[in-house]
Length: 160
Image (cartoon, rainbow, N blue to C red; front, side, top):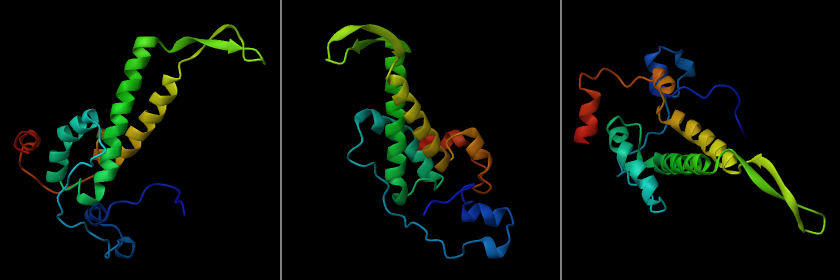
């Protein structure tokens, strides 16, 4: 069953915001501290995206063993988006497309939208959707809180 409207606020955030107690899920399942490893199906390019961000997300407890497939889908979408953008830059947004008659014979060409535009738009939508789940955009982070931390954010990236 699909839900409509805004996504449910994470329980920890609801508590911090002082939401009504009857609206807070006190029985929410919590992931154990299983090892967070990238799935085998990730390409080398997607694995590089994973390696760049996963360590910091694990430290912040945003990426858990339960989230590996979703985060891997985000990494894959980032790579597909990047590849589509490169293809569009190389080929252009408007290209010549063949025109065939009803017998399947080539009769000429017409200008049309490059099919890579569709790939780019779909990957863009997936990147944005999955990024929101992990707080990977400034507007998504603005609504999150992980408590007071005096350490420098760059330290986590350096120390892993």
